Image: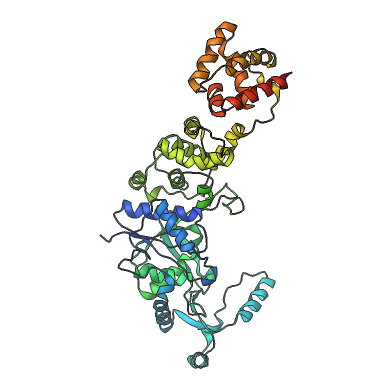
Length: 482
């Protein structure tokens, strides 16, 4: 049985799109599930769009996600080089072989001529495709232009009648009328192959058995198959993947900050949660299981369970999944990751970050939301005294006016400002005052936090704030209540 070989072939044009990460993930999972090889190839034929440093972004992102390739530019393999620009000399001979077979032809049309024809077609309300103008040139005319050094491209000679069809593992049997096919360029004027041509040559030479890619290539696949047939090569198995969408109408977008893997990492999502969730966007395991390690994903992955409808990237669901991962994190790792976010609002205040982390870990969904949740520790918010009302705690503004002045001397009398000391001092007084716990602790928490919802209760907050700041806030709240 032929060994399964999949590939991820990104272009180094910037950050890694989430859709690209998912494509890499599915290629990796399938290869590993089948005991095959996962290949990384850099497709840099479009030199104008290359972004410096983008190759390192690809390497770093895939490695961070645990998608380690078996062959690639940096580690080599038996089918290199794995960067298309380093394979440039390979492509032109294959294109000329197609010319000799009549499956491709030289095209000398200028950009200006093509623009005129395109404008004319659009004026008639027609979709422009190349009209095979240069296919009608004689051998002598072609040779004369070549000898004169006239710039050219090489185009694929697509059929114009009948239809082309193929089978896809996700979408089934697909047919396209050949009249819709355009004679795509194979070799550009600069001698570089187009993405479409290099893609086929490289996939064949690298022994790729399964081509897993975005569904935007569904309509181009008949042209790829024409190339395979012209060369007499075996056509790979196709697995086209649905688009990752923000909702049913909108794609993920750079403008909305939800398009790139790095967008989410920068916001404080955990890469394991992101990969786990991304695997489920367009695929389902056929069970109720939602949380997977990478090894579990490999075992569960099945291309037959890939969806034909767009994968909706539900950020709310991701937030929930991320919170579950955060809650299960090693505590010291959580503290390490949370510290920079604590520093955004608490740097220099000498606060006990370890205790704060203990209170925050179960309340953290996204790390970037930590600062807003702890901002009250840095500066007392301007609150409405109506929040002293809490029916369950038997508290209101009148109760607060009564108990806060009673609490103040108790807090002032604590010398060893620890959480335990604060707890013991206050709790000892509550029975003496004939109050319920809530009627004292709720007003105290509001008075020193200005918030109805906080990480930790009155004692934890008082400890974190320190004695001086706690007393200052208590006095301010007593004055606020009048």
